[in-house]
Length: 287
Image (cartoon, rainbow, N blue to C red; front, top):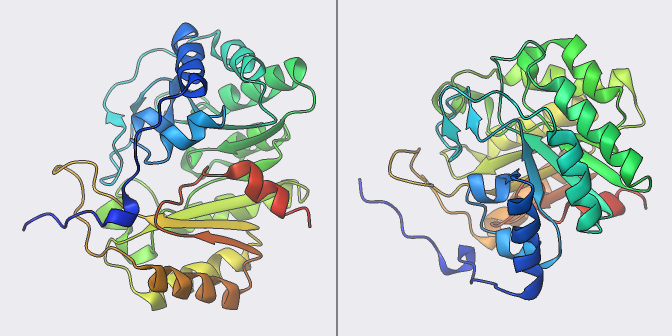
């Protein structure tokens, strides 16, 4: 099957400014990874120009095999013990007010990386006391003790992506479980209802509007505060094909369905990603 042509509205130009070069320099100096690069995010240049980036901790190799994701799969290297301090210093150097921390999935580690998230939060708040921190974590195989390690470090926003509708899990996320991700988000609220919960999904994999509505209903039933929806874009021929490119009118329908489900904060458009404009979205939850 011939790959569908990327619509013009999903194309982003190259931005190369003093600010983008500063971000790249700081990341390179501290040998840090970003999901911006690893996942080929289309908003990378815009975010770099705003002096921000989504930090990717625990290496650049994932133990899962999600068929939509561009991050390298395989046997990861041993984590850098100094990474929490390096991330904290980079956040200070970038003068960030809001930082997003995510990771590859590390099913191979005893605590699956939960302790690393907690350490980054702790080290960053020591160095930048007024910082707001959002974490975007793997599912930790649904182990509540591991979820609690991160929740007890008190991130301001705890994000875990549902990614797609339930029917497509065996195709898109064969090592994940739809209900497990819902239970994950539910447990965060039960552990600490002051933490803002967030989830995201991509569209264009063949889901129906009815299936999206059911997903929004499921997220509302566990009191998920923020939901992001963006267009899936095939990273390479090895990845899942795009079944449909959503139009602006389609995304208007998506927003309407989420609002009908009772989702408080829905952000949906072609270039939306989990951490895109995360600070602005966080601020919107305050009103």
